[in-house]
Image (cartoon, rainbow, N blue to C red; front, side, top):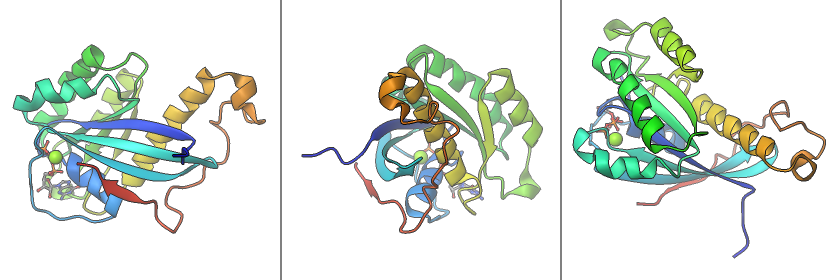
Length: 209
Ligand code: GTP
Ligand code: MG
């Protein structure tokens, strides 16, 4: 079968149970939100396709279970990930403190050059906020990684987060590959015009498992 994409990016969502990893992914893939909490067992995958900088991209996104008991299963998927989103809940201090633990897991189990990103989710819950945006920004800056606040409920920041991660991975890949081959006039693709994944018709997504 002919390859239908130019790039395949393998992404992973990690973070404490209940921070909203599954809801973020469902918001991104289906543009919907339901408030019922069904805790993920092990890992679920979704495949999304879209366009980035004029190239067809395929995203394989792994949504891991945050519950401790699944740690041995989920960490086996870190190695293959090109990008990892570390998610906390802005209304739950513990989930923010645990980002350090999750960063430690990434260091231990993921590839050295994996692109990381920290997301402070549930930013629609302004009255219950316990973690200031600046705290998230500072933590991310300490580790030299990008930070965004998101809301799976309203959709705020969700698409931008995936786009940013995909763009950063692509830039890294383009940099690594032979500049003559990948060149086409643009320098590494970072500064090339970004075509939004959001352009209608919407990207297509399907659940794998
Ligand atoms: P595990 O699968 O156990 O690791 O949890 P998870 O991180 O996948 O959490 P999930 O996405 O299932 O969301 C947990 C709960 O938080 C659900 O009841 C959601 O409705 C709620 N939730 C998730 N994201 C948001 C958000 O952005 N805003 C609000 N208000 N609620 C959210
Ligand atoms: Mg989940």
